[in-house]
Length: 465
Ligand SMILES: Cc1cc2nc3c(=O)[nH]c(=O)nc-3n(C[C@H](O)[C@H](O)[C@H](O)COP(=O)(O)OP(=O)(O)OC[C@H]3O[C@@H](n4cnc5c(N)ncnc54)[C@H](O)[C@@H]3O)c2cc1C
Image (cartoon, rainbow, N blue to C red; front, side, top):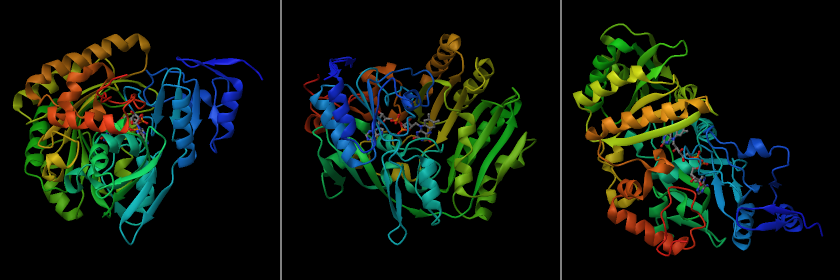
């Protein structure tokens, strides 16, 4: 037997053990010397440079079960990759086993029941492509390459959330492999405690191999983007506040301060009226009636076209550092602060967004899911993005300073999917509130007491490892 060993961060694996593991998976295993390894370990955030000892390229549920059992037997650190868009980089580990679901991309629409089952490696681009073929949709992330798994398990903001709730509010069931390697289904009727925690509690309790969602009819919508000179940003921000505060559930708009490809700083409003185009023109009219625009790209479009806009502002491989908090309201002072600070942004891809919350999100009872802060009217996210490592300190510093200045206007609660790894347990407790946090700890004790699934916004079990 070849005794060449592989460092795992915890112990060494001999070659035969790795070969046996590789042979037991339908999707195969990548080692650092294999072709494709570097591509497979890369995720959206270019700052994350980690090298797993092995990458399990799961092709289905059996591969996920085998990978979990192997990781437990060999006492390996585990990371789970869905769509690879975690900004803190939780989907890839240094040493250990990366359980990669990116080949599990099956989507099956049941048009009669208006439901869909989608595997754990599906992206929102895959999902919308398949569901819109039947004129159906549900709330999902606004950028096509983002994974349904991480996004849904953390809550799930998107353009349809005011009409249909968060992505996780549309879940009907989740197939999940536990830390012990058992497949179970969580729904309102089976493992209901787990189903509660999977709707907001992240990847803490197991690996979701597929998700079943409720779908809704959605035809062409009024959607797109309006771009204004930065000089009009304060005025447009206030119009945005007026339109969004009186809006029906069909309206979902993001306000942005961003830099255009030619270097011009600008304000923008991106979003949709998910209803009749004529009604949308009337409701969103004030946003274009008031004066000169740099670009008017708002019109009747397919939902999939709207979903393809934000990725232009979020290219893969850029270095990312985000700070975020929910806002109880959008005051004049908060508006003035953001508009006055944006011109000093050190990196052109860095942008600030305000997401409009409310509607159906706030009508779902706080106790129904692990998601908190459902009463927030808006969410602010400062999206630091740049290319060069030499710019890390300057851009991260700018993002942090702006976020600190914004604190008087925020609720103090963060959306877990926008939380960074450096924010600490207090912020995580604040994200859920003390009672929900304790309920999540109890679930962790029940489903993952050894904290196998720790690379996420980690809820630590009582007997923390
Ligand atoms: C460009 C961009 C756009 C975004 N847009 C939105 C948006 O519109 N709305 C929104 O709400 N959020 C958005 N986000 C944030 C997004 O919700 C999170 O980054 C989310 O974690 C991404 O999920 P993923 O599967 O792509 O990520 P991954 O990095 O693969 O995983 C994220 C976390 O989930 C865990 N995980 C992944 N798959 C599984 C699984 N199958 N079972 C159990 N755990 C799993 C991972 O271990 C990790 O902890 C965006 C992020 C980016 C970078």
